[in-house]
Each structure stands twice: as structure tokens, then as C-alpha cells.
Length: 181
Length: 181
DNA sequence: CTGTACATGTAAGTAGTTACATGATTGG
DNA sequence: CCAATCATGTAACTACTTACATGTACAG
Image (cartoon, rainbow over the protein chains, first blue to last red):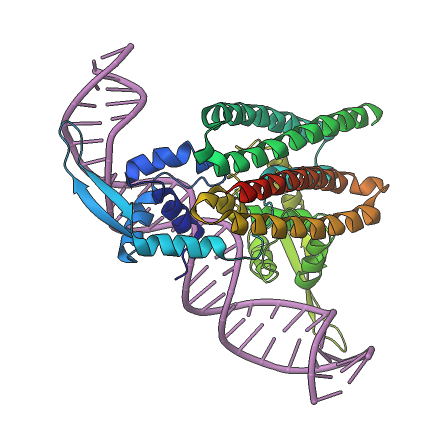
């Protein structure tokens, strides 16, 4: 059976242990969010669908003082579906599709100052992201059960640093171009 | 007026000069495709829409020996809309959303060999992309009118190299882990 | 005679987002 | 008393993809 990327992601998160929709959203935020960031509400669509496919089960958990929960757990069939997906080789996803890069690409249709300003703001965003990465790194470093999360984090860091180097270079170039014009 | 990313992209490409839908598809392929790669057919939806918004005009060009064309040209209003978008500061787009990275992240639910194989294939894809980047670089280098395309290309190259370094590191780690297990 | 380039468009589908809808408890 | 946290769900919308639909001309 073929699921969507969102469904596989939720299924994968469920494989770490049973969780309610709310908890799963928070868990996603602290783990996979650097790669996959759907609307928080989206999990409430996905989870019942996984149940209807037989890949998960639900259980109502009454609570006192706070609203009742619906706790989801992956089934044996769910685990098989996940493993099967993980083994599958798929063609590379869609390319970049970044608003920022498009605005650089079309930079000739506005002033160099506007372009430079976009780069500066992008650099600031990168710095903020770097902070989150470092926090996450501290939290998961050394724990063997986070080996794969660590690998994806490393990937993000490597690319982040490359993006920062590029931004610095680009700014220098744009500023010198602005002076000569 | 607010357009979609696809609409702004087509509008931007039109700003380089008038073109038919077919030509625009080819032009996109050789220019912006590393950042934005819609289904080729998609431009046939977008172009008439731009006309209906008053951002472009159409002109039927009869041809002999081959099918007639519809040639689109950006209007003054279209140029304003483009410039206005380029100046606008927007919040950063959605994060990564890469199938590949997700499969690494969930690597603990399959064997290290499967994960390593994904990394190997990813590395091959990167090498192929690097080839395209270098071709493009050759074609546009030195021409001042391609300054901004060159900037985005540099961005892609910088990140590509970072991804390759990561892939090599990750493979080493996965292989040593496979031996000890 | 077969595949590629030229050339455009519609209709249906899909994945995910946003808005709407509701309500208790706790900490400042 | 106000904001945040806990807690779930539906309905409408949007942007883009895929499949369907059609046809000529030229090169190998």
C-alpha cells in the first residue's frame, strides 16, 4: 500500500512509541521538524486514516482535569509498511522551490540594494536556525538511539554552514557592484 | 495583487522577453529549473491566467509547416507586479521535506545496509546534478546579464559540495557501524 | 515507419494548508 | 482576568500534478 509522505512520517514517529495526536505533534516538533514541518493540525487528519488502513490502533484514554486523549499505536502491519517503504528506492524529490532563491534569480528586475537586503535577512534566518540545530545537537549527542537523527542533523548543519558562506560571498559581491553602479 | 509562486516565476521569465508557452518551458529548463521545476504543462495553465490579470498580453502567431503559436508578452502592469513582489519581504518558506532525509531519520527501523545504500544512491544523484551545474556554469560564466543566475548557481554548488562531504562522512560511519554489529 | 520536436489545452485528482469550531485548567 | 497548555476534529480551499486529448513535420 502506498502512503503519502506525511502519512509515512507520522507512521515513522509512531514507531518510536504510542502517542496521542497532540503529543505526536510536540514530538515531531522536537525531532523531525527540521525535515518535515506540516501544519500541526494535519496529524489529526493523518492518524485516523492510518487506523482505517490497519496500520495503527486507537484507544480512548479518559483524563481528569484535562480533556480526554486518543492514543495511537502502530500495528505489526504498520511496522511492515514502514520497513517496506524504508527499503524502497525512490526517484529524487522535487527541486528546491525556494522563494528566496527565486528572488535572487530575478534580481536583475529590481535594485541591487533590494537583493542585498534579502540576502542579509536570509543570513539572519540561518543564524537563528543554527541556534536551534545546536540546541538539538546538545540534547541528542552521544545517545546511540539518536544515531540517525544525529545524521540528519549533521546534514542540516553542513548545508547551513555552506549557505552562510555563500551569503557572505554574495553580500560582498552585491555591495561592490552597488558601489560601481 | 497576490500571485502564486508558479505565477511569479512565469511572470519573471516573461520579463526576459516575449515567448510562447512551449518556448517558455524550454527556457525555464535551461535557466530556473534548478530552483523551480513545475510540470512542463503547468505553464499552459499559468499564462492565460496572467493575461486575465492584465499582467501579460497574447498574440497569435500563425506558422507554416508547424503548429501556430501563442506568444505572450509582459505588460507594464506585469512589470510593476514583479518588481513589487521582488521588493517584498516574506517569511521563510517550508522546510526541506526530503524523502531521502526522512528515510535516514527513520533509519533505525531498517538495517544499516539499507540506509547506506540510500546514501550511496543519493551521492550518485548529487554527482549527476554537479555535472549539470558545471555545464550551466560554463554557459553563463562571465556574462554580466547572467549575474543573478550565476549567484543562484553558486548557491546550489556550495550546498551540493556540502551534501557530498556529508554523504562521504555518513557512509564511513554507517560502514564502521555495520562491521561492529 | 518510428521517434522526436513542435504546439496547446482541459479535466480530474492529490497533498497539504487554513479557517472554523469548542472548551477545561493552570500560572502569572 | 488573561494567556498558555492541553486536546481533537471538520470543511473549504489552494497550488500543483497527472492523465487525457490532438495533430503536423522532419530526421534517421
